[in-house]
Length: 444
Ligand code: PA5
Image 1: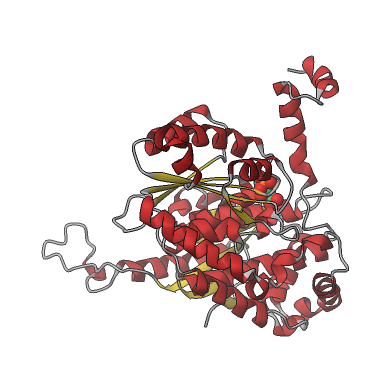
Image 2 (image 1 turned 30 degrees about the horizontal axis):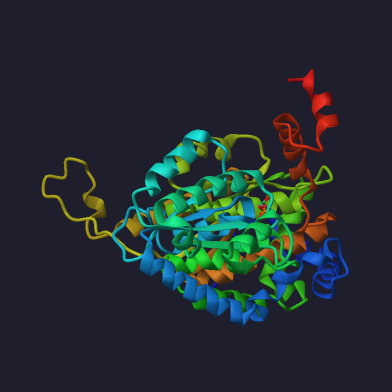
């Protein structure tokens, strides 16, 4: 079992009758996705990526990752949004959210170029400057300010430390095949480059070089990750809604949205899924939040956040539903021993393990939240390994494409992201933005 969809706690909208009322819309969405007849049809490369990926580049990714593992204590990954969230999510999910702290024979991986906080950039320099490090700069457009500014800083740091020639061998560029400023720099300087395919948008790019190089550098088995995604691709090809769990989930979340639930909270009971939740939030937020529509994607790590968000979920406005990812077999377990003194009164747990307590927290929470009128969708996976994660990634990507089409938006563009960029460029004095700068001047 790679992924099991459990709708037993999802309420009336998950009944077969209600779900099948969505059959025509799901069928239309399937048609658009698989025949390329819908909005954003230039960005459907991710649909067949788990089987159609560039095999020559894939081998180069493995070789580059091996070189990074052999010559670097640190890999600095510079990218923002879809250009870093997937890699970070996978590394933390498979290895640990404490990956950089644990003992290992693979380099630390630090993510930068996703903020313009000067303090954060300074701190990253401090973390790297006395270590042997390499840089993987990732930007599909090749013009994203956060990433470009960080790359300028880290390129100079590498060149000062190693000289231009050795620095060249420590810089890996992942960008568009032909266009963009970053591509220009890579060609001029002779850096090894990897491609973000034209037909794969940033938030769908984790299974391209964008995600795979940093993931492989962290010692993760990318073959198994791709295998899990390929299995999911095959499993969710069936156009029949009632035989396709991915489509059931997509239909269900649209039914709830129409009923006034406007927030979907992805919840997990593993801290190592925190960044996976961030990846999910970008995937759905950027894909569906447009034209005044869309579920707001939120996330929580339980039981931690039951002590912060739990009150709202239980008794606040009835605007939420939860999608819970539950892992049947945790990576590790810790026994709870008998204490003869029993001053803490916990001997009723003696002989059990921490994972047993987590399971009961999960069961108790599902019942409490459904009693509080918060529908719960449960996605069960066997374990937190590459194969299960590849499956989960593809499940959510496909559910996102289908959901977006059901919602009636273009799930593959992100025009709203440009607004802040234009203002920032104008305020920074970038050539070409003089008129906007004049318009904004008296508002700042
Ligand atoms: O999903 C997307 O397209 C975005 O989140 C981009 O990944 C993000 O804006 C970074 O863009 P780029 O890779 O062009 O630097």
